[in-house]
Image (cartoon, rainbow, N blue to C red; front, top):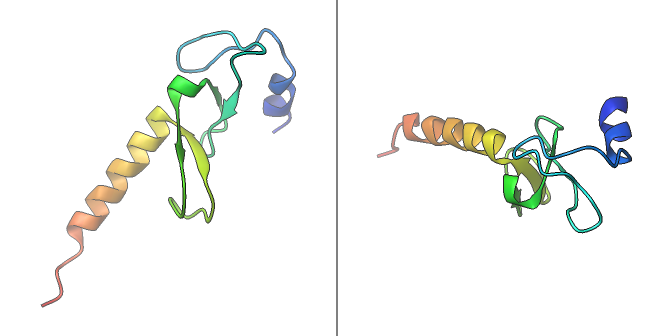
Length: 82
């Protein structure tokens, strides 16, 4: 936790997805799953109830893809009620 907090104030930090350096015009966004820092292009903001959270959350593209794929597989394995 402390490492993530310290990186928020580190001006030399960069996006964990594309390595773009953060500055006043490129805001840091923290993934709700892996807690790494990403730029806007490498993250997804999901509004509403999703992945067990009640409000809007931000995820990096890899975490969002992995979890969404897992949820799709679970939903497809649920037997239909007749």
